[in-house]
Amino acid sequence: MYDVVVVGGNLAGTSAAISATEKGAKVALIEKNNVPHYPPHCGEGMDNITASFINFNQIPCKTNTINELIINLANKEYTIKFKNKVLITFDRYHLEKELIRKTKQQGTDLFLGNTVKTYNPPHTIILEDGTKIEGKIIIDASGINCVIGKKIGLKPKIKPMDIGVCIQSRVKTNINPNKMKAWFHKPYADYGYGWVFPIDKNHANIGLGMPGGQHIDMKKRLKEYIQHEIHSDYKILYNFYSCVPLAEPINRIVKDNILVTGDAARLANSFLGSGIANAIFSGCLAGCISTDFIKKKIKNLELYQEILRPKINRLTKVYQKRNKRFSDKNFINAYARTFSILSFGNKLFPNFFHKKIKNALGEDVDIIRKYKKTSTLF
Image (cartoon, rainbow, N blue to C red; front, side, top):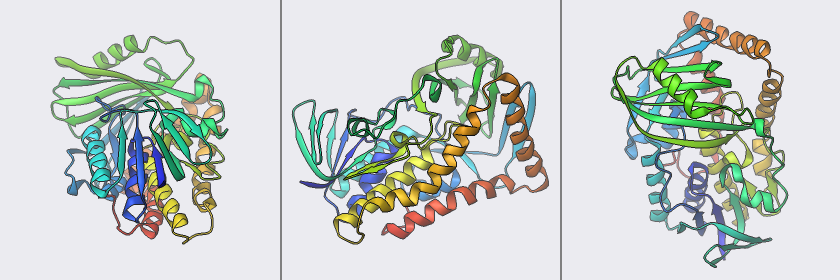
C-alpha cells in the first residue's frame, strides 16, 4: 500500500507528489495522459513570485518578461507598467514534463496513460486497465472533473455559467514581446476576456475565455479577435479548447482520507479564470500535510482545510461579486472601477501592482516553506 496516491499529473498533482516524496512518503501518481497536454491548455502566464518558488533557473524553462499590461474595456484602455518583473509567460509543456520527470526521479511510481475506473473507499483505486492501487491517503488533483471527489460526494453540481470555456491559438507573427493585452467583455468575449500573451517577438498565445451556456461561435470570435489585435501577417500554428472552473470553491476539501486540490477544488479566481498559483500552492500543501499525517507529526488531515479556509473564503467572495455583474452595465462599471484603481495606483506608485501580488502570494510561499524541507519546488 502506498502512503499517498495522487490522481492527476498536472501542476497541482505533480506538486503534491514531489512534496510528499521529498518528505519521505511512498507515492503513486495516476495521470490519464502519457505526456502532458500539447499544446498546453492554458495561456501560459504566471506571476514572478510563483515562478521563483518553482525556480525556473533550475529547470531551465523558457520565459518572457512582461513590462506592460494593456486592458481594454468598452473601448477604453487602461495601462499598467511594471517597474519590476511581475508577470511572465512560460513554456508550460516543458515545465510539466520536468515536473513529471522529477516525480519519477524521486521515486514516485507513475501510472501514465491510465484513468480511474472505480474507487472503492477508503483505499482502493482500480484503473481502466484493471490495475489496483491502494493508498492510505488519496489526493484528488484531477482538474475540473474532480473524479474522486465526485465519487464521495464532495463535488457539487456546476452550472454552465460557472464553467469557463476557452479557445486559444498559438500565433506566429511579429509582436512586441514585452506587452500583454486583455480585452474584457464584448464584442469578443461576453462577460469574459480575450488575451494576447507574447511568448517571444515572433509568437503569441491569443485566446478567449468566457462563461459557458451562451451559445457563441467561439472559433469565429477568436478569428475576429486575432485580426483586431494583429496588424501584420500571421500564421496559426495550433488551436485548443478547454474548460476552467469559474464556480464557487468547494467548501469541504477534506473527507476521511481524501484531500482535493487545485482546479478539482475549484481554487481558481472566477474574476480572471486564473488558477496556476493556487494549484501549485494547494498541491504542495496537500503533499506536505498528507506525509506529516502519515508520519504522525500532525493529528488529522483537517489542518489542510484550516490552512486553505481563508483562501476559500476570499475566492467565494470574488465569485459572489462576479455573479452580481451579469448585465452589461454592471459588468462594465464594476470592472472599470477595478482597472481604474489599478491603473491610477500604478501611475502614482510604480510598484503598486507588484506589491498587490506579493502580498497576495507571499503568505502562501511562507506556508509551504514551513512544511517543506526545501524552499522551492525544484
